[in-house]
Image (tube, rainbow, N blue to C red; front, side, top):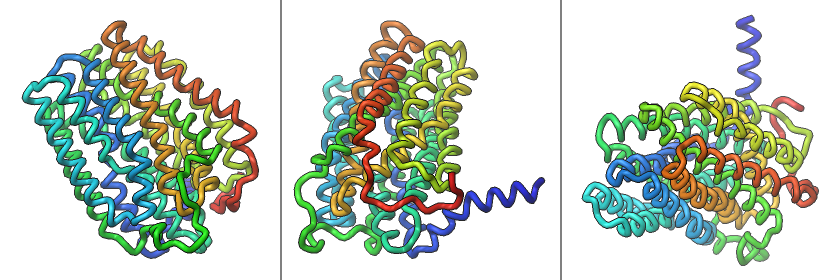
Length: 419
């Protein structure tokens, strides 16, 4: 039995080990992990800090929402600069602005400055937040081109890393903010952002070719002209609505049950479920197209969160969220794969960032709405915001089935196990 288990583990991990035989991939994957660990910390960190200084989840939710809104609206424009001038050239100044604005936000919170200062600094910090996940995925697409390795396996790896981040980050920021110092959580965000971001910028050999140096015939204009990308953005808005609302609601739910510090562990259980499914997903050679896989995964994700408004306790909430987490990675991997397949390579960073912009827009609306519902009716009722968001995402996917399942321009996935 142990040998059979060991053999199964080796089969699952083999495609991932093969990715790192390509020079430079391990270094940028590690730097990307460190640089984007803060994405799982910043939202809950803002909520924890501002709710403790203002006493209002509504205000905390609005600041978190404005941060995400700014990141969503400005992100694609910054991503076009990454595509045009290269990651190393653009990343450093963007990081400097982000760090300064985040420090200003922290100072405004602890000094009980007028609420408008929280809103302004939140907007600036969000607008200067680079989409590290898009930068890393663009590096995978560039580095693996012509090597015979599966880009879908690389995207599955990145999705699993994202979920590992959401296992570690919420627990880390919650413990730091509630047990060490109320500023400790966001301070850790700043340290990780700078160290990981600068390490990624220093690796010039694996960055995609800047568009200004690309051959004649490279597409101009914005990637948003793709009809498939616009549909993907709408789906991502719904998913972001789930992610953003759940993040705020879980903190409030734990607070209502007298265990606010447990919020990070509950959120980590959601990410853990997605991490497990992501690792398994990436080891499979899928016969079904990306579009068909999405049409299954997205509705299942929506159904998995329907029980949330009815959970009676933190342990039950953690269990429900853990099970729901298994549907996250298959949905996101299919969506990012569709972006890579439908957007020209020279616009890939922008296309991927538009996708995360959709998530950010969903987070913006849903986190603010959830915060208001929490203040008015309590955490359990606020979970209906999450349920409606998930249903909207599934509805868009099903209504756009013809566009999403249209024959892609890319090659089939090549991984280890065929299903």
